[in-house]
Length: 334
Image (tube, rainbow, N blue to C red):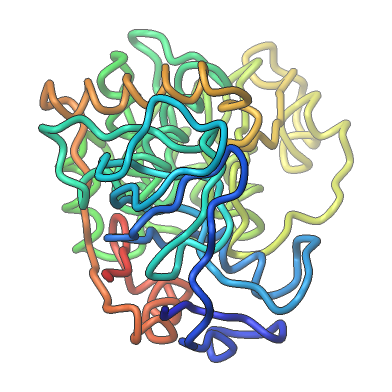
C-alpha cells in the first residue's frame, strides 16, 4: 500500500510516498481503510524531531474511513463500520491499524469527510472552551489564528456558549472566514496587538486568550488578559515560547510594571494543555465526540475544509500549512 514515510528529520521535503506492507490488526486494534487523513501541526513537530520517536515512521495522526478488519478482543465494531481515529500513528496511508480505544463510530448522517475535518479540532475546541477555561455567557475571549482549523472550532464553541470573540488573522480572506464563524471583532497580527485587544474591551482585557500560535503571539496574549485571566497555549507553530519570569503574571507583563499597580490587571494564569489528557479513556473520548457530532447536526458547528490534497501532494500540502497559506482544515484524500 502507499504510505507517507519519514526516514530523516527536516522540512516537508522529507515526506516520501512509498510502498509498504499492509498492516495487520493486533489485539485490541482495528484496521481502517483510510478515506481522509487530517493534516495536523503535530505531524510537523514529529517530522522536525521535536517529539521523541524513532525513524523511519509513517506520518499522520488522525483519519476517517471504514473498518477493514478487527483484531482479537475487539467488540462493538465490525468490518464496514464508518469510523474516525484520533491520536493514532500512521494515518497518512491507505490503511492504518488503530487502537480501538482511539476509534469513534461516525454517525450515518455525518459524511466521512466532515468527520475527518471536524473531530480532532472539534474535540480540541470542546475541551478548551468547556474545561481549560469554561466560557461563561458574557465573557470576551481572544482567539488567535481564528480562521485555522482549531481556531474556527474554538470560535464557534465560544460563541455558542455566549461569549464575544475577538479573533486574530493575517489576511482579509481569513477575516471573512473568522467573522462567519462568529468572531465579533477581528484584528491583524503585529505590534500593539495587546493594546488593540484592551481597547476593544474598554481597557479591561479578556477572560481568556486561546493561543495556538506560540512565540509570535504569547506576549500579546499575556497583555490582553483581564485580572485573573487565563492564557491557554495549545500550540506553537511559530516557535516554542522561551522561558519567562513568572512574576510577570502578578501584573500582566513588564510594560505595566512601570506604572502604579492596578487591581483590574494581574494575578494571571498560564496553562499548556493537550488533547491526549482530555480523551484519557474511551468514555471521555466518546462523550466529547458526541458533543461535536451533535453540534454539527444541530447547525451550531461547521467544519470548514479549506484544502484537499491527494496523498502524492503531501510535500506541497505541508508547505502550504506551515507557510500559513491555508484556512480551516486541510485533508489528504485517499
